[in-house]
Length: 128
Image 1 (tube, rainbow, N blue to C red):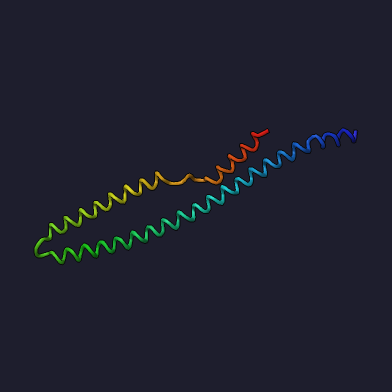
Image 2: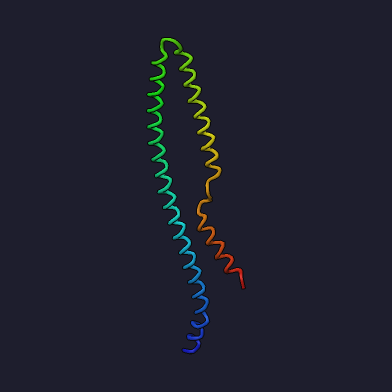
């Protein structure tokens, strides 16, 4: 009887190693996904913060510029100057919105490295 138990364990040895290898491979890929998520989160937070600061300074500059131009032309062309400044701001807003939209459409694939590793793993298991 002891030989039967030993032969059963020997038969399961390669299967267990293969399952263990697959689990380890899957675990490594999940770790890669986690790392990529953390990197992407940090990058997005930094971009959002810098973008908000830039918008705040730009708004302060535009308000100051608008007041300066309006005061300079107040006696002669006040309505025309205010209408011109409004048009320039509207054109700038449209250009920024279009560029932001095109930037979203041209965004890189999320988890590109992980997907590439999964493809390599799949190809490795397909080959005889």
